[in-house]
Image (cartoon, rainbow, N blue to C red; front, side, top):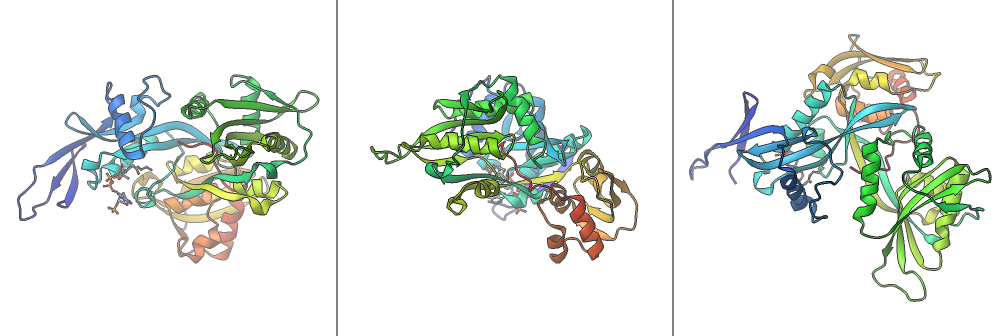
Length: 423
Ligand SMILES: CC(C)(COP(=O)(O)OP(=O)(O)OC[C@H]1O[C@@H](n2cnc3c(N)ncnc32)[C@H](O)[C@@H]1OP(=O)(O)O)[C@@H](O)C(=O)NCCC(=O)NCCS
C-alpha cells in the first residue's frame, strides 16, 4: 500500500496517498465528529470485526450516548470510532474524574492512516474541555497510546486457584442477594474508596457490570456474606464455566468470579470459603481480584496461578486538576519543581511546582524546572505504579536529585493501583 500523509484543513483531516510511480490514488477525506444518530449498529459491526464476534447488536444495551463516541467518517461511511466513558477512580481516598477510553477501532481498509491517533486527539481535547482530570484505558497496542501521552499505570488480574485451596475454614453465613439491594453498592463504595485505582462506580458502571454477567449466557449467582448481627461483609458474583473434558467423578466446571469485594480480611475469608463449597464438582476459581492479595490470603499462596494479567494505561488530562483531586497521606510534606512534557495537551506543558502538604496537593505553573518528566510517566507516578527511583534510573526524570525522588515517592505512596472493571 502506498504511504500516506495526514493534514488538518479547517477541522477536517485530509488524507492522501503520496505518488508511488504507479499512479496517484485519489484524495481521501476523513472527518472526525461524534457518532451520527442511526449509526449505532454500524459502530457495533465495526467493533465486532476487530474484537471478534460478540452478541448481536442490541439497541437497548448499555452504551455511552452518541455524543461520547468519537467517530471517523469517509463521506457517509463510518471508518473508525472510540467511546469515552464517564467515570472516576479512587486515589488516596478521593474520587478523581476519569474518561475511560474503550472500543477503539478503525476499519481494516482504513488503517495505517493515523485515524486512531486523530480519534484520540479529539477525545483528549474534548475531555480537557469538559474538565476531566484523568483518562484510563486497556491497550492492545502501547505504542499508539504512548504517542498520545498514556503510560502503564496499574493492573487488572484474574488469578486462578484450585477450588479446594480456597477453603479458609471460615464459619460462613451466605445468602443470595439481589443486584438492586442497596447494601451491595454501599459495601462496594466502602471498600473501593480505600483502593487506589478502583472505579468510583456510577449507575452506568453498575449497569455494565450486570450486562457483563448477562453476556455470558449462563446462569449467574450473587451472594452476600453476613455476620451474626446481619452486617453484610462480602459480596461474590459468579458464573460456572463447564470444563472441556469433564471428569464424571468431579471437576465439571471452573467458576468465573466476576465480582468479589469484602469489608475486611474475615469477610474475604468467608467469601473464599463459600466458593470452596463447590469443591466436589469445581476445578478452578478464576477470580477478578488483585493477585498479590489473593496470594497473601490463602494457605498455599504458591499455588495461585497468574491467569489473565492485563495492565491499564493512564494519562493526566488536566494535570493541575488531577493533582488537586486525589488524596495524599496526611504527614507528607513535599515540593518538587517539574518540567512537564505534553505536546498533545499543551495546557499541561512547561514548568510546574508540585506541592503536597496536609493531605492536599497542588500543581502550579512556574518554578525552576529541575526534574523533567513526560506526561505519561507523570500519570504512572500519580497512580503509584511507577517508582520514581526507577524513572530516575531510566533517565525519565532527568535532573531529579535524590531528595526529589524521595519527595515524589512519599507524595504518591499508597496501595498498588488495580482495577476490577473492564471497559
Ligand atoms: C489499533 C488500531 C485502532 C489502530 O488504528 P490505525 O488508524 O491504523 O492507527 P494509526 O494509523 O493512527 O497508527 C497509530 C499507531 O498505532 C499503533 N499501531 C497501529 N497498528 C498497529 C499494529 N498492527 N500493531 C501494533 N501497533 C499498531 C502504532 O503505534 C502506530 O504508530 P506508528 O505507525 O508510528 O508505529 C487498529 O489497528 C484497529 O482497529 N485494530 C483492531 C482493534 C484494536 O486493537 N483496537 C485497540 C483497542 S485498545
